[in-house]
Length: 124
Image (cartoon, rainbow, N blue to C red; front, side, top):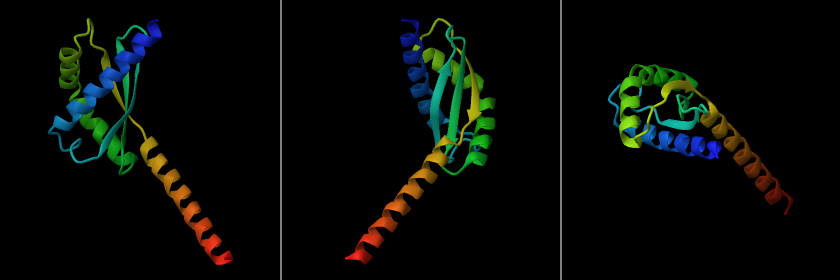
């Protein structure tokens, strides 16, 4: 039962952080095409790790994490007021390259499909 609550709170926090990131004016965060990949919340809901990825690479994600870390107080306050939790978890932002990795896999699959389609055209 507790796992269900942690998962639900995790998704709620993720949704709220995405909305807050859109409104931030920090140049390190703005225009970086950020994606919140996942949020891991501790079982007692006191800590949350927020994994952030950027479409343009891990370096932009690391730069955005610096901006998000400096805005942690604002983000935590907004999350707490929107979700009305008894205790708002302490947020830790972590750069993640999973979106970039996914794009590389997609390109490889696409090129393989294109190559096989070209071979099929040549065999006919």
